Image (tube, rainbow, N blue to C red; front, side, top):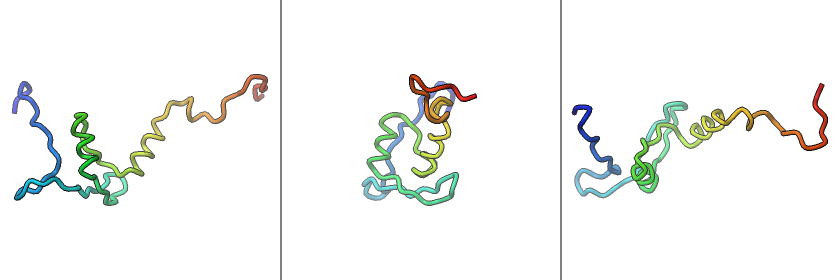
Length: 86
């Protein structure tokens, strides 16, 4: 495949014999726990052109929490009338 060739279309995991789609059991790259990616979840990612997840839901949530903006992780915001800490 060259740089100008289109990527092959991604499809849900399907039985090679009957062609029926099935859920995938994957291993998380962070915690090595097995997690299930349902047919509906596969369809969601594929329809949007996204790569299938490599992390379990818990590890994905932990990564999202770590990527929040600094403002979101600074703690409580000051209200009007609050004094600045000294």
